[in-house]
Image 1: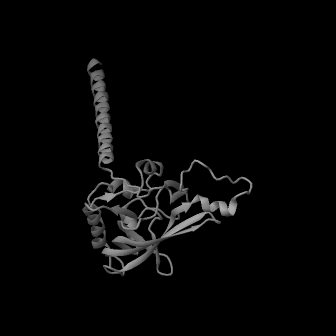
Image 2: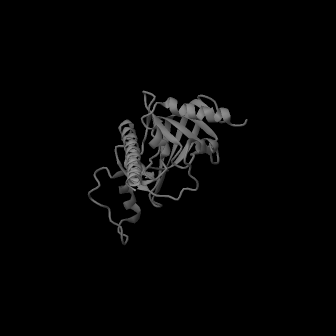
Image 3: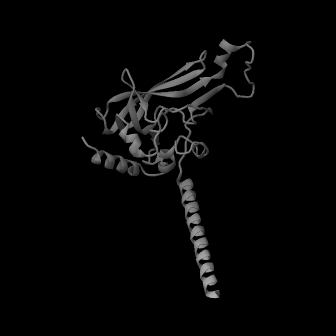
Length: 237
């Protein structure tokens, strides 16, 4: 009886040990990810997050790639902020010059227009339409100028002068959207490292929505390039 109890206790302690080691491994992997994570909001203004019901989202690079009409590296060479203060909405149209193409009926140095929900929004302009109406109040503690950067799910539009790895889907009138609305884009810096424009706090709040930023931020661009190239090579023509 004593030997049997001893074996049970040994197995129990071994199980606890395994769980502890596994838990520590997960902890240190997460800590290493946090240490290598690169973040830059690329805005001087307060970020206001608008929430939306996304029509379709993805959980891996394969999903983004399968649904993209264009996969490319591209520089934002110009953009226009389009704010409608009466409707309280804003969108941004960016002109991208393609510097490397992985998928799509396009070539290097072609330009494409990409529309994103969000952008810079001057709260003072709202007063022209709503001042004096019941329930409206322009707060005095927002700073001057009272400009905010609106982003869906905490993801603000791309910024002129930056280079991005993008997954694009054609909408209409030769305008493209980001695959997964906010998912299929990540910034590249001058050292060929990928940089998230979404904070870790925001990523944690949205589950797998920002898997690209969570998994690749701080990594060399070669990691993402290899995964996309492997997908393209294995895809039927």
